[in-house]
Image 1 (cartoon, rainbow, N blue to C red):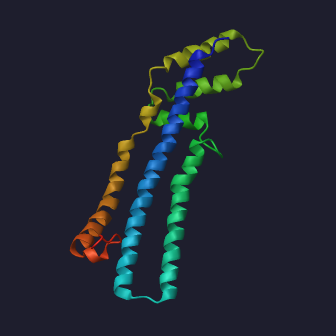
Image 2 (cartoon, rainbow, N blue to C red):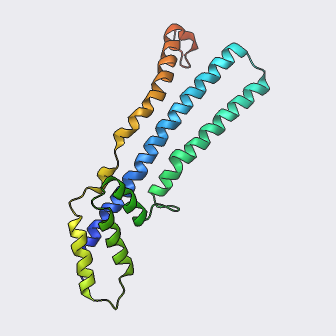
Image 3 (cartoon, rainbow, N blue to C red):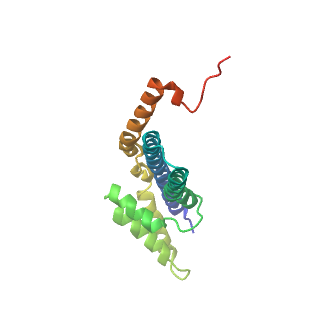
Amino acid sequence: MMNSGYQNLIQKIDEFIRKYYKNRMMRGGLWCLATFLSYFLILVVLEHFGRFETGVRTFLFFSFVAGFLGLSVYFIFIPFLKLRKIGSALTHEQAAAIIGLHFPEVSDRLLNVLELKANLSQSQSDLVAAAIDQKAAQLKSVPFAAAIDYSKNKPILKYILPSVWVWCCCLFFNPASSPVQPNVW
C-alpha cells in the first residue's frame, strides 16, 4: 500500500504546526518586551519621583519580576514546549481546521482525508487507501505554512517603540542615569 501522498500531506501539516508555534512565540516575545519596557519605565519614573521606602521598592521589584516571568512562561515557554511536542499540542485535525480558515477551498477536503485515514482499518481494501492518496495529491500544491503570516506581528511594535523612544530620550538628556557608565580615566 502506497501512502506517499498522505505522508507528504502530514509533513505539510506538521510544518504548519511548527510555524504556528514559532509565530506564537514571536508574538509572545514582542508582547513580553512591550510589557517589560513599559512597566520598567513606569517603575523607574515612580521611584525617581516617589523615593519609596525599602519595603515598597522590594514589593515593586518582586511584582515586576513575577509579572515578567509569568508572561514569559505563558507567552513564550508554553508555546516552546508545544513546539518541541512536550504536552498537548495541536492535533492534525485542529491544524486542518485552522488551515481551512485561511484556505476555504481545501477545508473540507483536508478534514475528509484525515478522517478517512483515521477510519481506515486493515480489512478495508486498497481502493480506500488509493482514494486517500488521490485526495492528498490534490492538496499537494496548497502551501499550508503560508497561512501563518509573521508580518501580522508588526502592529505590536507600536507598543514597544514609545517605551524605547522615551528611554533613549532620558539617556540622551541625562546620561548620568545610564546603567552603563563610561570609563573615565
